[in-house]
Image 1 (tube, rainbow, N blue to C red):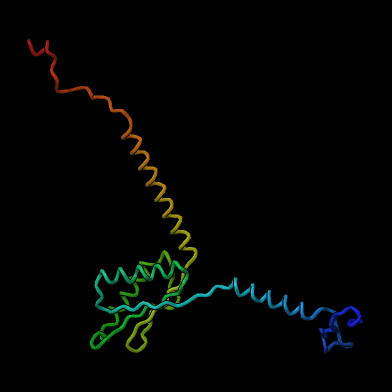
Image 2: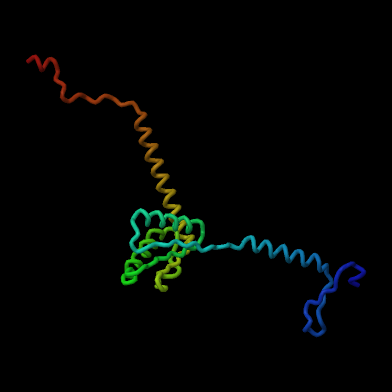
Length: 181
């Protein structure tokens, strides 16, 4: 019967009594399954892990630069592994590394959240930050409201500057008649 229609006889459930079969175009079925798999892979999100390395004696300028990079990575949707590298006697003061990691987490809290809390791993202290979509949305809404308020204030200042200014009454001026007396 399947050969008459130019289709295939496909076994669906072999363990059933009697076995269940289906008449179908198996090549078309395989093709459609491959297309569904391809679509699902397109929709899957690929999160990469970026790494940023700090030192315990980092300067404020370097800290700000590296932390802004971390913020950018989080806003792009990447996870960030923050590493504090200790050398020599710096190993005696892990609290300095912990303070830097806490400062990084606090600075980028609008873009991401701590996924793996700081832990010592040999000569390194590691923390992993992940993007936080809710915090990012709230931060963006706040930024937009601040921008709209600034634009409204600028527009109000511009409209005040364009209005003609009437001369104020001269308080210090003396009437010529009263001056003659």
